[in-house]
Length: 188
Figure 1 (cartoon, rainbow, N blue to C red):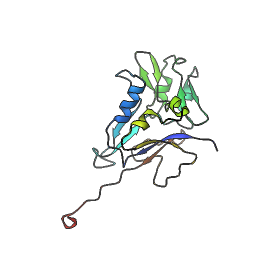
Figure 2 (cartoon, rainbow, N blue to C red):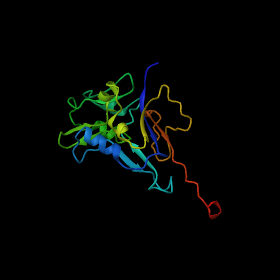
Figure 3 (cartoon, helix red, strand yellow):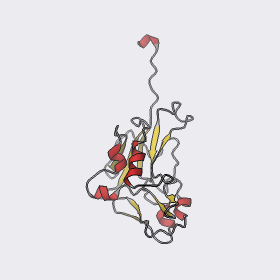
Figure 4 (cartoon, helix red, strand yellow):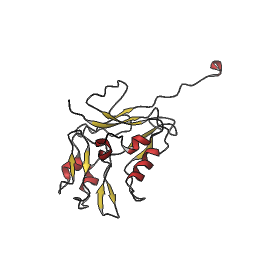
């Protein structure tokens, strides 16, 4: 069975420390205006304690990625293991990928005048290492998983607040945060 890599985000564990985002930024020496991984507080309409629940998001390495399909110079390719790679040296900076991705993964680099995005640290993965964002997470809330064998029953592909684009089939799974148990005076 072929591997199919994706991200697993456990919002029950994530503490919103931004270590994953900073590790990514440092790994790739990104300019201040370019951010591949963002940590978003979950909306209060979805989860009432927005300071306690987060989604760490980057490229979702979709099964049918729009970035790959709209690029006129084929600067994107999808590996057999599901990783969607952007070859910046081929990019002409047209912005088609940026405009077409409903998840906002490709970002414009004003210094390079080209698009760029998370490539799941494929060089590290090929060397048997974890992606830098995963490696840095102090609470293991962000992981790389093989979706071909990943079968954790408490996960969802489209949690509340995450855009549902079934045709793209994003390679990301989530554990949705649960409301904390309220302890009454009688429990003390």
